Image (cartoon, rainbow, N blue to C red):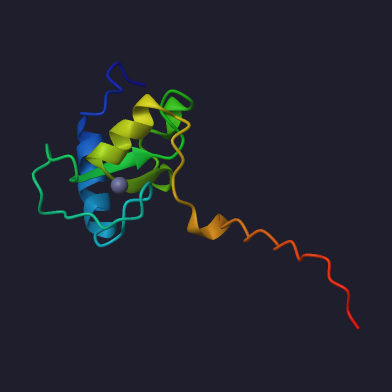
Length: 107
Ligand SMILES: [Zn+2]
């Protein structure tokens, strides 16, 4: 296997092009806002692919479509600097806290 496992290899370019189409219309997985695919790729709100499991954790998943989610360039970069940056996870909504009912004397 290879010498250049960079993100600019042709496999990555092909994969990102494909996913860009497949994931079109999906919101940013980090902030939940829609992504405008027409924006210039240098624009902070443009479409990028974020690695769910960061490359620093598992480089072998760099080209794994299941490990890629659509995200804004800005959000992707923010998460890159701060891995604890918490993405929105609609599937794992925390239940609302149960209200504390003031004790009351029922008659
Ligand atoms: Zn975003």
